[in-house]
Image (tube, rainbow, N blue to C red):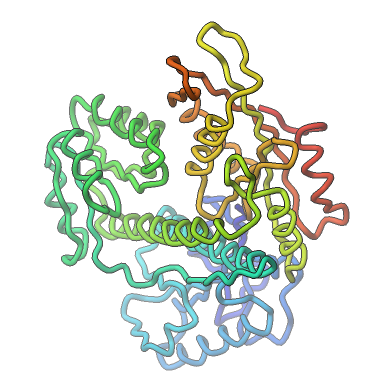
Length: 448
């Protein structure tokens, strides 16, 4: 995911950016500034921004409404669609926004600002925007096949959150204090109790406290990530100083984030909200896409999207006003018998189970297709090669550890996945979906 930020300012910063924005450079954001009162148009590089920010920190209270209106007007005149490029306000805690002033913003961030807080917030909003853009594109593709698909926006109100807590209990009270009172927290004393709760209640996130003798808790996180039902389920680790190494092991096992104890209440609340919002939107989109896929051209064996649908979708992307970046992965699936021999002709039911299992481990905005030649292709919108590779490595580690049994057989089959990667965008003169899909297997640039 590209990380380019255009900051609207009240004062002209010239070639510089506001002082507070320097921390974004440390988080690998490229930042530019543009004065809302300037009559000049931003340069072409600035107009490729993935997210907008409005700096209100040095704006007098009586001028804030006017600056907000100018920023909203400028955003529209520059062609930044509200649903596709989020805009965030940065303002003093004393500034009060009414409903009209809040309307242009996806979020408002107030000091104290830290690199982790602001970077995580921006990245999350960009992910939500990616999901929204893909929902709009997918809707257009479905329409080509005569099916209407609702484009739901990311959730704004995070009502009825329910979190599951697992651990010795030392951090439970500070966590309850840090979070709003309307968030319900259920505590589990052991991994088995936590799993029982998860299987019977729709929790929004899991908080795991690591303090002493944590191996069983780290193992539990790894076990959850190998379960397709919890592949993207938000998991935050609260780590005491004595358990730093275990905290890193928990991250390696699949936890989303680690928060050291004692922690900033504001930062902890922010991370919970970010992860829960993303997961709720992904669940929403996954349900819509899954139900609508039944009405689309699909592969007869796996019931995954067909090559016809994928090419139609790429056609929609190529017609977008701006460039659409994407990564493709060609997936070779191998089946090995217990004696080490290769099974080149697995039965249809086994192939279907493996394909659908891989699909279940992908994000809602991604797509798994089975081509007419029987090969699998994964499509990752607005995703760079690094992100795609990390996602595929996680998928491979889970699939290769999962048991698969061939129909009418009494033994298991080992499944091996090999990937080839390609990255491109629709503004490239040689953007050719036919060639890209062919070269994924015949002439791969990256293979792992």
